[in-house]
Amino acid sequence: MGCTEPIAVALASAQAARALGEPPERLKVTVSPNILKNALGVGIPGTGMTGLLIASALGALGGDSSRGLEVLQGLSPERIQAAKEFVREERVEVEKCEGEGKLFIDVTAYGKGHRGRSVIRNTHTSVVLVERDGEVLESREAVEGREGEEEECAAVPMTVEEIFRFATEVPLEKIAFLEEGARLNNHIAQEGLKGSYGLKVGKTLWENRGLSLMGEGLSLRAIARTSAAADARMAGCSLPVMSNSGSGNQGLTVALPILSVVEDLGLSREKLLRALALGLYGPSLGVGCGVFGGWSPFGPPRTVSRSQGAFLAELDGRNALDLLRQYVGDEVLDDERLMSFPLGVCDDQGKVVAVRALFRADLHGRRVVTVGEIPEGTRVRFLRGSAESVLDGAREAARASLESLGRAPEWALAVGCYGRKCFLGPRAEEEILEVAGALGSSVPLSGFLSYGELAPVSGMGRGCLFHNETMTVTAFAED
Image 1 (tube, helix red, strand yellow):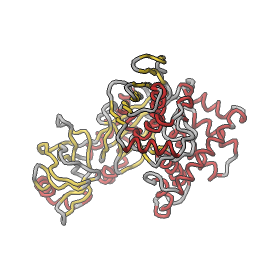
Image 2 (cartoon, rainbow, N blue to C red; image 1 turned 180 degrees about the horizontal axis):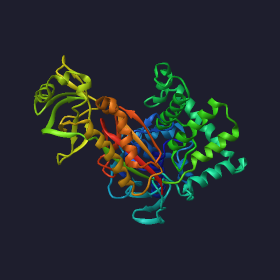
Image 3 (tube, rainbow, N blue to C red; image 1 turned 30 degrees about the vertical axis):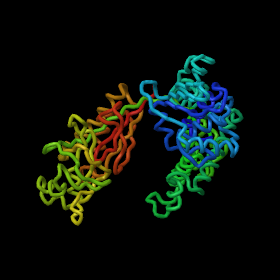
Image 4 (tube, rainbow, N blue to C red; image 1 turned 135 degrees about the horizontal axis):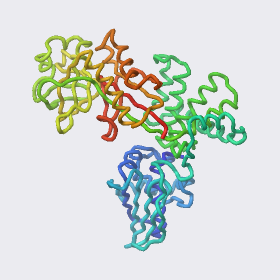
């Protein structure tokens, strides 16, 4: 019930308060960046509040640490109100720490000159240290596991062929419990479609289905149902979900599209159970990513001196539209031609790390409309290219994905940008041929067009940015 990260913080807080032995006067919560990111805006069931402050207060003032991730189950309205007051009085401090891995939570509870402390590491229930006033009460080795994966969820290594054979041959009574999980996930999906949770992505998609390019068919129903379930869960809906490998959202993402297909096609219960068994079990994947555009910078690096969202007004104090016209003439007044001159977003060394498409010249406002915002202070460069250079960029993206993966892929996904299609015109299909040729004829290739995508910067390991007018190729192989 609820998103796992804030619940794990509640669990650590409950342990710290138990070690303190009396109601805490204040709490100090130290978490890894990944926990902070994943939990900061997440709703806490039954409170109408979000984030780590209320999660920690609830755990410390009323949580039952013996119940693990159900630590907040059955809290009384009085306890919830007390926790809200605790937060309003600014008695919870949250800070980020570096170098402790992806999943790290350290909570200290203070009261009457004493302190209780609890540390969770590697998995959401792996309490490695409990102490009072520096005296160790409990200590154990950290469970080795991937972020978000509990010890009991660790996968048994199997090939795709073995997984398929298991899913199609296992006796139904051994996987019948999956039907209850699908029912739970569908229940929260229906709640998300009815209520106003979070960003209301799923509900909005469904209510505006008549306007969707996908129509009202299976694809939209599956997407809306899954999105609505995630909206509800992350906004703090108290309904339970069936997780996958310790992740509730993964459980929703696997089960709800399968359920949608089974319902749409009128398939049997056996088909549902076997599809769930196949979908919920999978080997760990190796992933390699290549991101290239094929564009070349021209002119000196410049700094965005005035912008608002996707409206670019000034570069180095000069009007951006006038400056662009100085370089390329009145071609900027043609929206399709404007896409031939994107902007490169630069890092501190002046290297272009992402591309922003220029969507339209706003003559009335004397500014350029970009696909994606470019904040003030960003270093940028004008870019240009030829059909050959852009096709070369697609080929380099595929090669980079292979190099990043480090072995032969079993499948690849290519995401191209609509702006590149406009730029290449009748040669647009050649881009896919370049990617397929670089990957090799034995690698199945899927793909689609987008107006932008989140992808790594210059391959894996440097974080992700929003890219336009770029080819992104992701290659997959079993570990």
